[in-house]
Image (cartoon, rainbow, N blue to C red; front, side, top):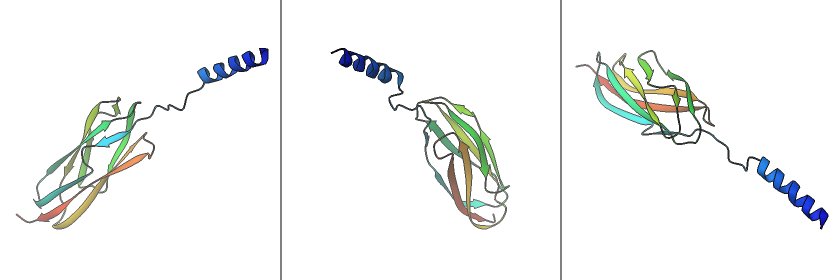
Length: 127
């Protein structure tokens, strides 16, 4: 009986001291990951807004957002998003040439996959 009580106390101590497998981590959710700009005009600027939400249980840390070309400027409202909060990633796109285009922005953060890719595309024409 004494061995059973000792075993029970040791087991209970280990159970209380362990993490129980619940790991805190951020999870990023996007309102959309692809935007179709349709037909746009050369020489104009276009604003694209992606809404990002942290649906995880730990802070989401946005490290960098890098556009695939110099024709796209990237702006982040916040770099730290607490669980349940959201922010906007705002792009300003100035088409450099006419024709079909496919562009992306790589968002580096502390989520499990380390990065996410957001896309936009369309067709540029002369006014």
